[in-house]
Image (tube, rainbow over all chains, first blue to last red; front, side, top):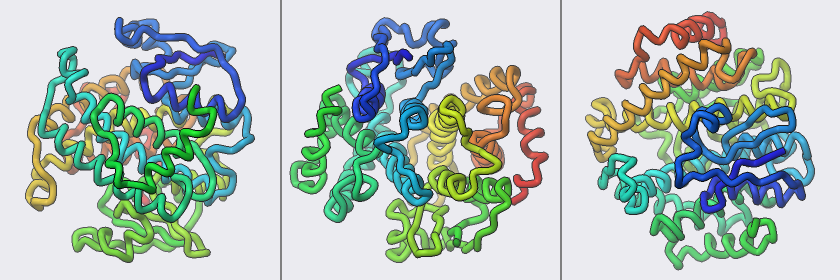
Length: 204
Length: 204
């Protein structure tokens, strides 16, 4: 199998960490995102959304979207489970992962596309009010996470899961490239960040 | 089990259709969303995001987020499968469902919160440029769906899946309440809409 990757982006990192947690290896193929390769006809045939990552299976078929790729990998190698196994675990991990994506990663993405790095490319109409609103929503969600991580060690409960991978990759991206680092006073969130970052997989 | 529901909203409808496809019955509890019950302390204890739907299991635990609830139900009653069973099917259905959510439902939601119905409540800062951008993104995605539905009968391939439920509920919501009905010339998309709407479950 091959993973179409672009090292600096947060979503391919989610899959690389997932693979490392599963002790699975695939060939990594760098896509020239700065050169627009992900919008080429050849790449759009792999993923009509024109985004990395994309998994290519040995029969030449493709699965795109980081969580969809991870779920494919989970079905190929169920242990250690990162999506849960009982109906309740499956539901709670997906709930945590989705709330992180819809209520934190989505506003981080809006702040990113309306920020200076994307703005300089001229590829995206800039809406400063949308950026400010998204920054407020992100910081509000950080405070919620800080409260919840005072009551449990991981995003979805007692066990490390795909939701922790989502949280880590998006918070690191927000901190490094979107000027949205969580406030240092959010000590439960930072303790979680340290706990998760200590896993060797996160260097993948 | 109980489902905390609010009939007019698109996300609880997704779960009601899913339950009907599975021939499962749960007690439906209407939440007084117009009165703000979903933001009350009692409801936030069920779902910290303050949103419907929420599934309450018989032991009093909760799962929120429509797709997380559906996945819980799928694990309880695997047949007929609406998420797929092989690694590839699981991946492709999740890919289709996520692209519908992230690239269509998300801009529909932005157009909705910046539209006249939410605007009149005064609860959300209105950004007209964000509304216009989201409308353009939604219409662009409709055109993509029309092309893809010329090549396959359902959102994720040959079989009806949870991605069709997502597509139907969001397009109906966009058409009825966000002034974002797909153009009539998108004949493949409308043929799909007719095919899916003919299922008895969609009346749930």
